[in-house]
Length: 242
Image (tube, rainbow, N blue to C red; front, side, top):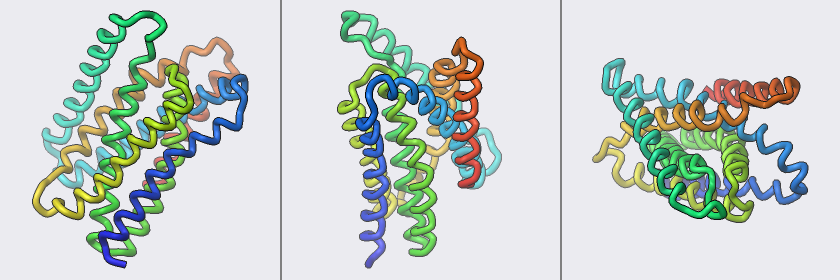
């Protein structure tokens, strides 16, 4: 198989992982509500782990230790802060029945960037060596499983119906295919790696500003500790993939 075929097959398989949320259809609403916050905690840990263990170190390796890396991180953080302010304003002008948690849209935006970057990383690895590409493909797939389940849980927790969350999560995941194609066609012509620290900033903002507040104020100590355990699990799992 040629390199382009490997890139398409591998990135499409990553996109399919996004439909793992369909397993939640097997649970009734009562059980689903019990696991949603656990998935939110897992997602928060995975986002922070991805930012600090993967995106920022990779950015420093590419750009070196200079102000540009941290500038892009702050830009990513600030833009998502601004986006959330706009979404809050927009939803405040809707009727109460139309209101949804604004962070759900931020998760979709951030996940789209995240998946696009994964596509670029997978594609560039295959351009270097097929074996390296396959290894990267496996690592990204292992990374995506808890990430996509966590994202699906966040969307449900934000008020979305399961079918809508599943559809938007899948559409967002298709950006990994686009990233793979871009890496194959334009990697040598255009430097798109500034998106690495930008995505890190967005991940840090969503995890710290939106997701962690959802899980840190639970009145029951036992459940609070369980949420923290899932949070640490998300961080540690991503650390192991480093």
